[in-house]
Image 1: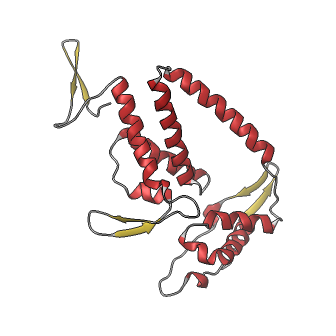
Image 2: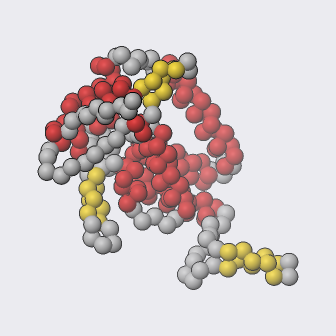
Image 3: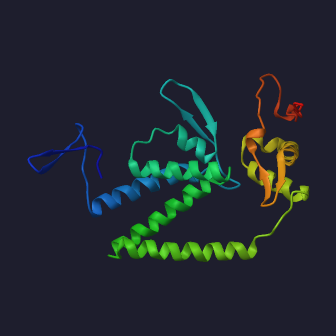
Length: 227
């Protein structure tokens, strides 16, 4: 595992590395990558659950960020290790596609890698481990589909419960009922019915922040439509 430049001199490849770089390969590289990824997962693990704690992050210029959002924490951390950066991408993808569950995704990825490390120590080939995880993924999706419940955009009670759950553990939790109602109303207003189902473009919802008020002062303003 290295970051460097490959050069070619007389048909013989030469790897040019920055000063102080350590190069590892084989089993040592596997252990190194797994350890780095698990370290990232451990950094956000304590923010999860009803007893989750906030993290105070201080950057190089002294700015302070206090949050328990996994994606925010990982974004603020200065991570250089390639494998650890992949964990950050897991959080970013989860946040982009779902908007919640970033910490859970990272913690699960860390546990999967930890168990993979145990299997590697038993001389099980990485291809076999990967195949096993893919089979487990299929079984997990099958189980989730069995317990999943369909909902409709007219079912405001369920939609508000979902919004409340997404805010649990975050700073917005103290006004979650009020914010959940605003979130559901705003989404319903931009939802468009199409043959394939509902199309909801969240870019049609704009959030503005103004200093001086409290979170309970949050209100929904319907924009005027151009004629």
